[in-house]
Image (cartoon, rainbow, N blue to C red; front, side, top):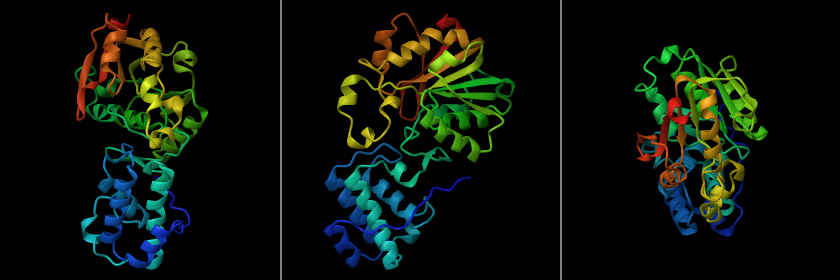
Length: 312
């Protein structure tokens, strides 16, 4: 497994952080300082953490090469001056550049799985990931029998990797329009030694998949509507806009997926699509459909499922 690179330690660039480098000594000191600076700066979260405390904890532990799940034993550890400066430089970068933490550490997590990520691809975050763990067993009762699965709009390839793990006898096609995103996906596929089972394909949705059919298609497509795109916090503006923007109502890509998915599903096959907070937009755009909305930890209106017969 590839470990995220830390790079050479940087020095703080601004007087406040340089002063902190002289006065702060422990992990507890740095954590308090980081949370204060993040709150003061009004940072936006959502790329792995959803609050200033968790984000500061993660960046500190990662920079110090400490276990990410064990903060308490190290809170009162006194650090070397170089370690203090390295942590402060990372906290300062987060504030000054509004860069998502995952892009700083080149690491993102879905469940227990770590994935490489950089600014060529959207930061992995998908409610479909937890559903893959369950194998969609109500609709696909024999996970071992699945032979063909598609991850449409794969981005960093994280869902394709999880699908390959959940369906051990399936070949997984992972499709994206972005060559840059597919380069990131290739790193993750290789890190999990799945080159023989996961095929990366550059295609505008189904355009390059002529004749291919699947028992399961999952997609976390661009679905942010135009108004929301205009109001995105700075952190989200650091991600590829192509991976976020879904048109005026957020449904442009979803419309294209639903228009052609039935041609690429085997009998009994299902389509699973994530739309974030777009349930109302889905129901307005497709009043004739009756999708099944799947329960996730974040709610039951984020991911929907349709069978092949419904799409036809």
